[in-house]
Length: 101
Image 1 (cartoon, rainbow, N blue to C red):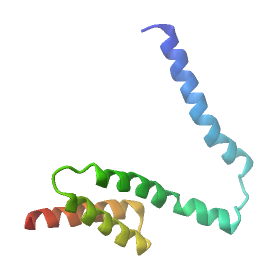
Image 2 (image 1 turned 30 degrees about the horizontal axis):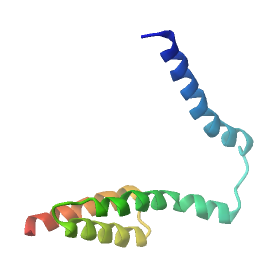
Image 3 (image 1 turned 120 degrees about the vertical axis):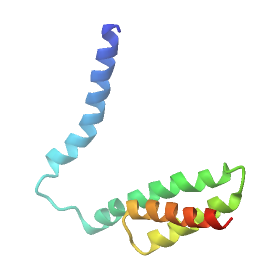
């Protein structure tokens, strides 16, 4: 392995670390405004939706698995559950659904 691999890995580490370190450094001890906190609180659900919705269109065998999984995920997320609970709940609903089909 050439030395440029190590320089590339080091460069990627620095580029990844800087966007995380700057907010921690400058926002330490400060509280963000309520609208900013609300937006940041909803980012995991937006990312989850961006991952689930396109995947529904790529299901080739039975489209109902995607539709039911998405409805289950939306319903669980609408209750305000944690993102991990949404994912696990959707998987559980699909597991139960697949037994009956």
